[in-house]
Image (tube, rainbow, N blue to C red):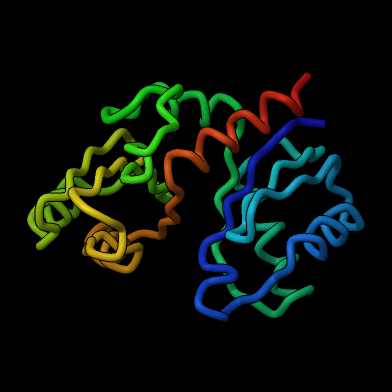
Length: 185
């Protein structure tokens, strides 16, 4: 079985699309996924699957979530190579930077590589002094102040780029990569 990471978009946010991680682990195990581990309540799952197509796994998990919990959500499925690329290409930090300053660093996983004109729309959006950089289907951003002051929301990103997105802070991103590495051994 191959090792994967699933990032759920929009669960357990503001009291909507509630899924308890203990329940999710049990249900995914019953559905045939192996060594299921979750990290925090925002929908981060490391698991093994027999299927090798990340796109097929994503569709299967989305269908599973709809059936088991009644939620229509987007699931991003990544593997170790994807996460290593995310960690290596951050223009604002190295993998080892998990200190106070990293709380202003975020990674947005995009459902596909955005079109050039839509990238420009995001650059032109009123995001203040926040910085953004793209690397294929990944958007990195660094906040000028705190998250509550930023205009860089998932909704803004999705509306400008015309695709689906889910965001994790840098510390969570690196923690998920570490979980993948430990599970691979």
